[in-house]
Amino acid sequence: MNFPKRVTIGDITVRDGFQHEEKFIPTEAKLWLAEQLILAGFKHVEVTNLGNPKGMPQFKDSDELLKKIRASKVVGHLLSGVSLTAVTIREKAIERAIQARQEGWGPDRILLMVSTSESHHVKNSGLSLAEYWKMAEEWIPKAKAAGLKVNGTVSTIWGCPIEGPTKMEKAVEFAQRWFDIGASDVEHADHDGSASPDRVYRYYSMLMDKIGRPEKQIVHFHTTRGWGMANVLAALQAGMTNYESTMGGIGGQPANFVDGVPVSGTGAYYYADPMITGLIQTEDMVVMMDEMGIETNLDVDKVLQIGGMVERIVGRRLRSECVRTGRIPKTLTGRG
Image 1 (cartoon, rainbow, N blue to C red):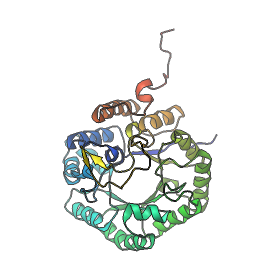
Image 2: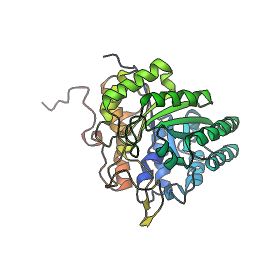
Image 3: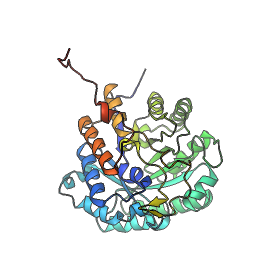
């Protein structure tokens, strides 16, 4: 099989991973994790959401966290080579990011998002697709003028939990539209585990045929149905080289219940069991890439150590198997 020789892996635990937690994760724990991820070699770290914290109280510390990362004595000297991302779905959040950037402590990159499913998009953003594209076309130039990079995300590529099946061709059209209006890169999101490996291969093959630029196309899988790592393999076979994931595979919809208090989040969970959620496990993907001889430029042992500590932060066993089993020995153990 013809796999890429090297890939980029971004970690999004601090934002996407923690947003589904039903207890507030202390700011110092988020800071520790962001620092350790950077020390492990991650160049792309998603750290917060700048939307209204009333509905997402996990991010009520967004300003404080960004300021602490910028002032960090642990990784401050490394930040020039790292991209810190904040989610900014709507105008006020983008405006906050621009102001923070101008004040010297803001993110390097912001994330906007569309869904190919109209109903899912409205639920997620409060705008129709037509209204959102108009908003994005207005605000992307403002963000770039402030020195921000802009990610355009496409969701519901392989299916919608509200409407059902969706057309992958529409997602490719949306990806091209993001580039046309100034996005720096595009994330392709399987937000609820609807993607099967065969359709993953077909979609990314189609994307490469129509647009190419694999270094600017980010692969984002949820593993609700257990297909996550199989989907990574399918994406590799299609030539994709840029991935993102979370420690222990945590994450999903913003929690609608935090510290004993019901909150809006993004409304009802997709599944009756709030624990049926999660992304690709960073630890397992990094180890798999290492075993396949694919370069990640990450400290594999440190990644596993971080994964073990994230389990302690959230207070439960997470999905990573490699945190328990470790790496496959490269030399004889001497135990025979």
